[in-house]
Length: 122
Image 1 (tube, rainbow, N blue to C red):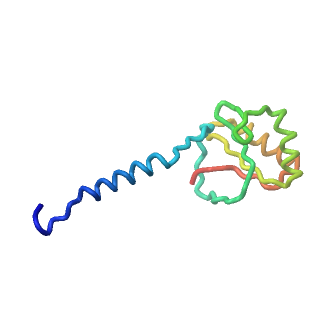
Image 2 (image 1 turned 120 degrees about the vertical axis):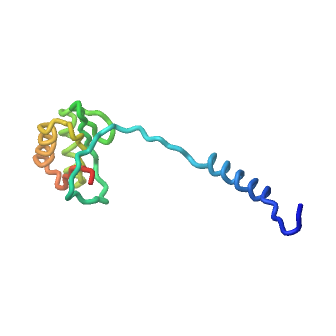
Image 3 (image 1 turned 180 degrees about the vertical axis):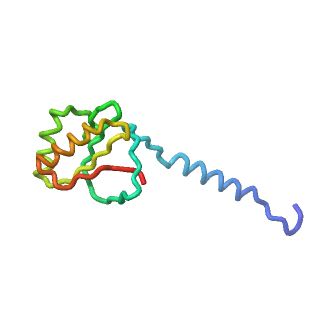
């Protein structure tokens, strides 16, 4: 080794050890979800509230907090939301039937849910 040269081998070894450590200690969690293509809106706002989520898919299926439910099961749940004064976020696919979304919105208002929002992409 020449005078004035720095041996980089120990530094490379430490780098690879740290890389392997972070690779094994980091967790890669893939959360299962329901694929929904949200409609775009220019005037949408970012919300930070904790809301209960209703998802309406393009093939007219309804999910409440990631669990598929029927329209008949939805009404008692909306009554509970109204009683607990919780907000509701409707995530409807852009190809979901508009009639179903309006039906859910109307049922929410009928049952007394005060805060109803529709999710969009900006």
